[in-house]
Length: 255
Image 1 (cartoon, rainbow, N blue to C red):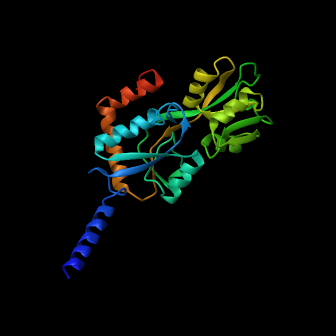
Image 2: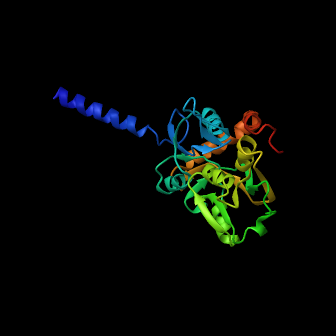
Image 3: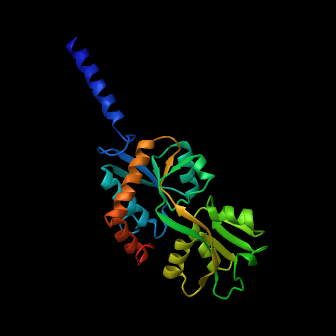
């Protein structure tokens, strides 16, 4: 009888421990899975030397987690898969330069915005393309599942080629397989600066000014959303956000 009682007590304790695992309400040492991109510099990427995730988004969510007393574990995937993960609630959090849009709000709870972005065209240095008005009938690359792909399909008559990895689109542009690439301004600028300053340039106006937000599956954890917003406000107020921003973008954030 004592053995049965001990087994039941142990099982009850195990159930309590499981309940306190990765799906808490924020803080108190909970650990949350974070879906992110493997190659969206300078926001997130896997350091080839260390195998660790680095970037602006990575340090920001880690700073928020530290402020709020919870832990994060990263899992990388293609951007389309990340959005699917939010739909299915497979992961607790998503961060990968995710633009806040009305369509995405149908299946995502967004945090307060943490970065203002927009879309820009990248073209070869010798291209005659001067703006988005010049791309009808041309082959233009974009990121699969991104707002850049949506913009091209909804607002132009370009031949759109969508890539799971945006770096592949940039490389195809450099090789002459594409006429242009439309994607998020900071990533386009970063790639040109680091990899293609002698071959690519940006043209035209910044389109579709869209803020980035941290994503959570819709209505799954309002307490965690509140915690993330509180942590984001705190790291902005105490200067941590500014330090991370300057580290990854080389300048102070706009005021």
